[in-house]
Image 1 (tube, rainbow, N blue to C red):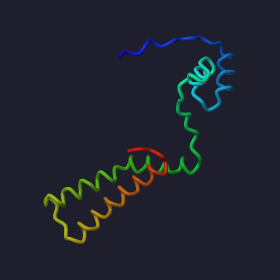
Image 2: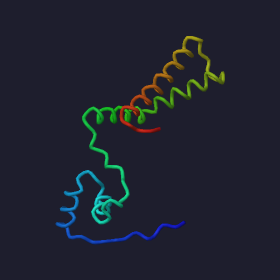
Image 3: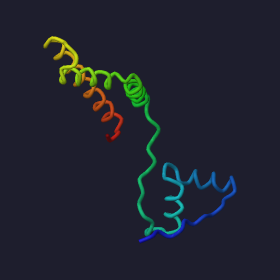
Length: 118
């Protein structure tokens, strides 16, 4: 079943600003539908709020963790150990595997704190 073509309407800058002000955190299209269709308008998610300082810091940590490729590098070392292509003693192997697990935990915890689904 195909969807109908979108409906387009033009507003002056003042009209658009007024609508955006009235819509608040609601997406503009949703607000317009709610006014035009009243109770029949579909319900939409609200825009997410700007992140608070803690979330911004968490996001920065997560971004840096991703940029360093530490998790990938640790995983490659652990894989080489498991395949036997890199000689290390049992203690180093356990330390590297533990480091991989800790990085995975940090990533999952940061994503959960930010509300990001993997």
